[in-house]
Image (cartoon, rainbow over all chains, first blue to last red):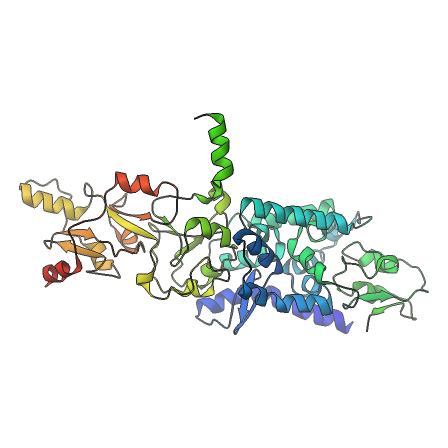
Length: 256
Length: 216
């Protein structure tokens, strides 16, 4: 329960932050600046790993400054798994807020994904990356919901939102077709981060021996079957399966 | 053009890299367009720091340039605070560009048939006026590189020199509609050669010493 409380606090402050940061910038406070594609906190540069892969392809050389910028996200993914998606991604936050409305929740969760395929996701990511290389245009961040949302938040504050906002509408629309479709298969940021996730990363684990009530599988937003598939590269450590488990023996717990 | 030539052009010259349009500029310190399109990651950081709201994000109508920053000189010129060059994460905007003279994204070009000043000078010379003449000088007065990038020839008509950086402030302020002073982007590839041939813009006889003399 404490985990989900921390998660909710971080989520809501990030969602507020993407609007507050551009306002602070307009007041000439430049401590935090940038969008989720690339931002600075003080002097620490942090960038989306997708951005580095793309610029290496399109410019044809390796830039040390970009590599330095992905150190923090990469280390975060190596140690804590894909906490980016569950703690920071504003798209997840928006979906979780929308799902507070009962009829939307019912419509979206009506049909849960049967089976995730990590190969499908990797093939989609690699072919997108290949297309970026051929065209010489680093466009992948346009189809990453957190990047698109934070960029649009800046533009909304600047009073000039662009049509890319339709991508977010499309992503939410696709939820009705398949739960977290963009997150599971398209989002290049999430796919990229899952490359860093390894067997030692933070993840819920299943100890075996439980009531087999199936509550954990019912709440998992990524369509993972916690009793069978953990650790999974689709798991983004939201901790909802652990919270939902009613077995006193705690068969689902955080890996130590 | 033969079909094979068309195929050759499409495959050899990336068609996404030509975005030439008068009065539409890249931010200051932008590298050459071909390189810029490769590097710009569309992160909107330059747009975020721009205190004058000069930078706009290209929409879906701009095709492959979607998401890149543009200055629309008619709407709002660039005031060259150089904040955007400092935040660009990929080097699409040159970090070393900190002074306005280092920036060169375009050149201004005056349309002598509609400029109030030129009409005024013409009316003075001929002794006949049409009623739209004005000793306006708005472009000269608004130029951040006054008397360097633009000077008043014979204290009468504004003339653009080689030092013009193409910031577009003159275009923003020009009172005529359509604008009599326009910015021709120099680094946007595409039709620049052709455009400059059609529109001769530079006064070849000019040098800086002259301006100071005329000015005093």
